[in-house]
Amino acid sequence: NDPLGDVAVIGLGFVNNISEYMVAADILVTKAGPGTISEAASVSLPVLLTSFLPGQEEGNVDYVLKNDFGTYVSDSDPSGIAEVAVTWLRNEDKYQVLSRNAKAKGAPNAARDIAEAIGESTLRWKEINEENGKVSISDISNKD
Image (cartoon, rainbow, N blue to C red; front, side, top):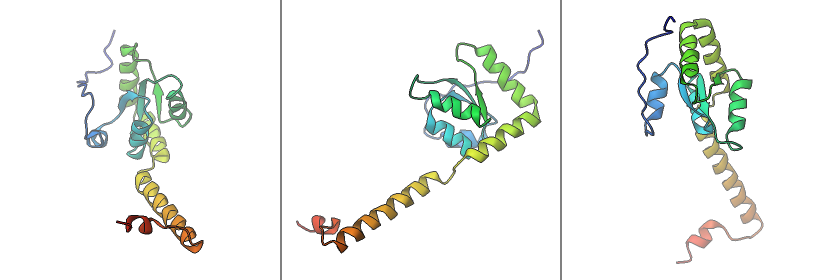
């Protein structure tokens, strides 16, 4: 048995600066959380999913597989996880395809876009209510 690679793996658990790790990483080994997958895609990071919450996260696995920016190997198969990770890292063409596909699905400005949409919707609501003579937020907040 020829070892596939010699890689130091350090489990971090929950961290507040995951974006810094993602930018520095070559691949992400993780559970199928939607926020984590989205964040990885926004920085072109291929994902190797190892678990999911039944019902709640199953579709996330399908999404990654369908869009070819990662795969799923059960966390009960650590050798399989290692084999896929090493294969990706040794095959530059495959790695580039995964990375490009992740980037194509990434939305790095999603939070800003969502906040902007909420703001625009709020302004439209305010204008409609003021045109119809209904109470505005400023009327409520100035009642003190």
